Length: 324
Image 1 (cartoon, rainbow, N blue to C red):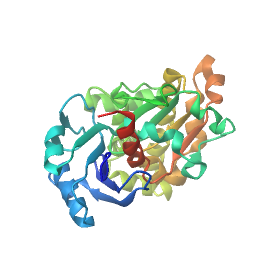
Image 2 (image 1 turned 120 degrees about the horizontal axis):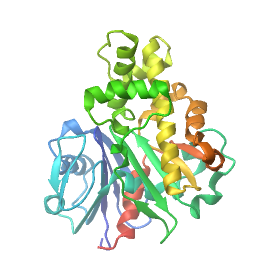
Image 3 (image 1 turned 180 degrees about the horizontal axis):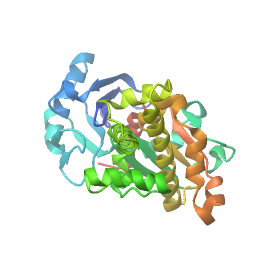
Image 4 (image 1 turned 180 degrees about the vertical axis):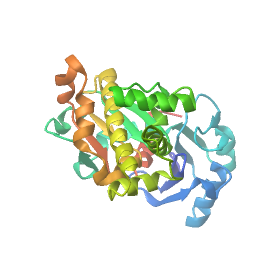
């Protein structure tokens, strides 16, 4: 078919691998698939399984977003025991080109493309979309890990590669300082990801139990979410509220760092699953709680990304953004 088509697009996180196919220029994504990473031994195995399931030939070009820094040919996922060579993956799949970038770098590329129906406002969004094309955008996403990125308004939108999720988590009040002290005794260094991720939600629950003098139950993040939603466990409710406040604090720091007047976007799988347990008002209050710069942050809109495949669309866009 030529000119980089057909294309295989991927989005590999710590839990799931998402794939899609673009047969030719101008076509929408097709055969979108989400499979647990545990089903396969490597990205090459996962990709071959996807191609076989859908009867696709070898792709001409491949673009994959991965939940880890990409600093050379060797890629090691942060929260999954997968490692691979980019050139080796290209050879294994018979492609002419294979682009591998950080998953949140890819997701940042998609932000200007998102429509109103693919976003849910967090608080007042009267600043809305006018600034999305002319001002920096900030992106944060709790999932298996904590992704952070942004998009600068240069060269049609330039994404930022970041590992900010591993920066030190700072408390904003005495309760958080006490909680982080519990986590520090356990982990030594307490990064934002230690609290703002799937496992982070469990870490918060266990720390709250320790502070309350209660034995923590063996829970997964989904269990903590369910118990918070139905208010059946006081410690789970408190853990989710702490999660909301800490996320607001970190997101506000990110918006200040990037001067993200175009808006703050929340990606990842955790916040959409929290639903009503995610306190928008609490998040927003903590997002804006920056002393002399509170009014600056009050003017920055925030949205939860509700689109199902934005990172796959962004992977396709990245192939055109970065020439071979």
